[in-house]
Image 1 (cartoon, rainbow, N blue to C red):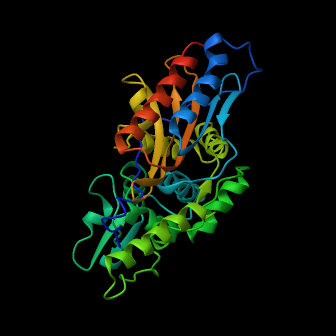
Image 2 (tube, rainbow, N blue to C red):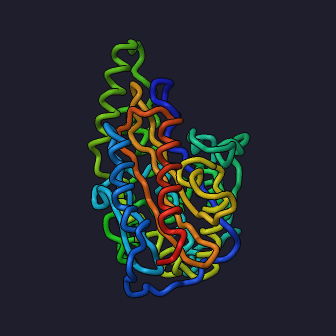
Length: 341
């Protein structure tokens, strides 16, 4: 069930890739910092101040040097559709084990369709009573097009959210957890049981109260959370091939590079820069947006990699202002780290 008009579009996130996995890079001993790198922390602190009264968490890692920068890096933030990247890891891990196949078909019914996609995707393609999709189709829909129907199907396919969290923990990724699908997130916002309609005869005032309670419940909920530090740890292990086989790593990075949302962090990067990322967006209520996120891997022309995550919570900023803030973060990090120390 899609969010009602007073809850603006929910959880759509999509991001992009290329064809081959990024080469592993050893973490070198920390080198002397350039003036720009020393100033990066100050600039990130300034951007966090700019985000107020919303709260933003940022984490940055220069893989070559091992240097790290963060603002509220250990604070948990709602992932929203950014969780579709770790879900994809759990799926591809089963593919690597031979328990699933990319060309394996999954049948979806109209009852499986949930609103929310960056572009018309899997949910929009379900026709008649039932439609078939391959696992690869669902991965493209989930990661590149941020389709909620697709990710719900993938979570069911792997055996539930706990399987995703278990995969993360087995890889040593702490502070990132997946506890529910997109329907579960909608239940929190709507304050309605799964699949239920609004109460018959509900007045506008009663709806406002219900949705206000849902927004507050979402902010307080501990599920489907990650810290910015955990997000860059996830990205680093993915890019270095520690989560999946080379072929599955290459596929997921391509799906991230192929994401269809051009704004946020990638809007601040020079045109043509290799950026594999995943965004996430929550519903909004009374002019406040619960979550607005992006996390990704910047690959410099010289082969160096920078991992970056940014998670914005409970922001009264407009969409244009939020996009501009994230573009500023991307630009600031790129300019500070574009020259090796």
